[in-house]
Length: 101
Image 1 (cartoon, rainbow, N blue to C red):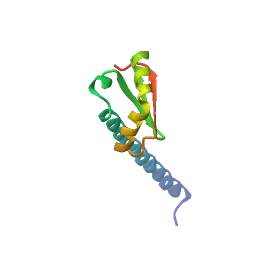
Image 2: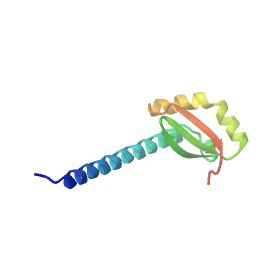
Image 3: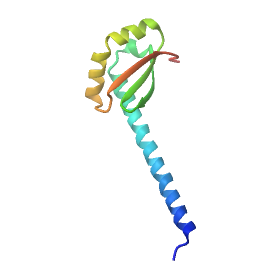
Image 4: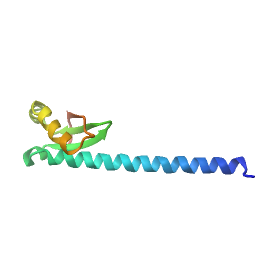
């Protein structure tokens, strides 16, 4: 007969392993979204943005100036369509002014 402690350790290890697998899957999805997003941009646009995150279908991007924020916002629907064709998981893009270094 197993001791209650042994069962708890087994459950804890399984929880940890599931958590690690989930994080690995999230990281892979983020890399895929970043790649799809960057491939959809022009070289000039890539110089002015920095991919920040991918969560729940939303790509978060920093833009280096208000001019580029406005320019990318005007073409957001077209850009979103390009990215979505490459990666079905991407549902929206959010731009904000921030560091791109």
